[in-house]
Length: 552
Image (cartoon, rainbow, N blue to C red):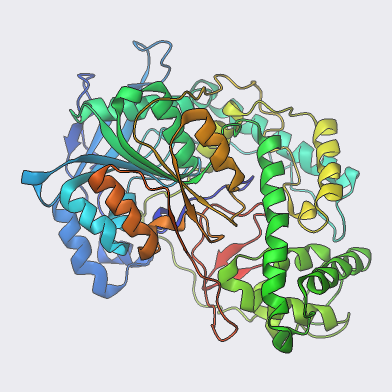
């Protein structure tokens, strides 16, 4: 989780199946779901979502048993008789209704991510989730502010407010202040567009909405699967309504102090730094291929030296119109394990390159230097569903955030990171995300222990939600820890070996104190074309473009 928090890929690329018809009536306030006609997407829309042609029949079959509806909830729970908003839900009905065990609500993270189509993506991509759907209704929903629920939108600053230029090399205080001032202008303009609505976007309010959805579905208890920020939502929901929770699995667990962004980003940057020795040991074992050193210490020394060299004198390739500084070396050293072969080859090429050379082949796809296809741009289909709402994400983060928002405090914190984390420190957030947000945390969440069933899974080497957080959560609200030995955010639902444990938990209710391997780092013989990502890493610079992860 980071300043550019994104949506778990298990849902962000979800297949669009059905949405509430635009003519569906609003709830009368009876506390029930207002079910409406579902809109079946055209083949063109499915194609725009990346659905392979051979998967279309499966999608159409899922559509046949999808229910679409809305639930009316108070905008402000302190004034429940006041303005109402709607939460959009989808229900992928259990195939074995006679032996149905219950309902599982799912959320992919963010905040700001759409969970409306997550049941369909999980069912299509995971045999274990498909098996769970035999016995459970899977409930997707868009949190308030997102997608088909009452949406958040905000104005942008005027044309006279432009993003500042960020020169290569270490971030200076003067440049950081320009970035901070631009963030202030963005947040203030956004807030002014709809302060009444934006102030009611909090994790606590989304948790209250979820309990309204549970009640509207007519179930006494609901099970839950959440990833990343979705785990924080689960923690708050369980703390507020312990009697409403059946079985709950939280993957890539957010820590209990997540409402302090300064603390959160410190821990995330620390986790990035801890990843370097693991990668360096892998690279050292393959010194015959990469020539970076035959011990982890030697490899780390190369990265440290190269980072300092490029910070002092950024490299300029003859066929690239921008300078590259030491952040590129750091970025390659903290790459997720599925792209280690590509990242390590790129680092080896960077270590021997000089200004005036053409971009080395090993770096072309990473820094976006490959020729682009100038094909005709195409307009996205009009009914393409929203998968992430940045406004809602910012509002929820900033309404929850209790850390200082002033520039001097941020700059002192950032400078401290550079000393504490010599490689990853400069990849950390370069501004206070909530700078200029006009109100303090309106209602920080409160977490409490309860005796209900709770499974927590953490990934030992990942950075968006560091593994150390899972122990903090367990001591705060309870639960059983399941350990995944990988560095990939939210991979439990994507690796069959792990998802089998998840399936068993929801079918039996017995928490699992074991673990699974998760995503295995590749050998150099593996050609890595793409990585499925969850929330962006701390630098927010691993960005999917086509089939590659690139530096930007």
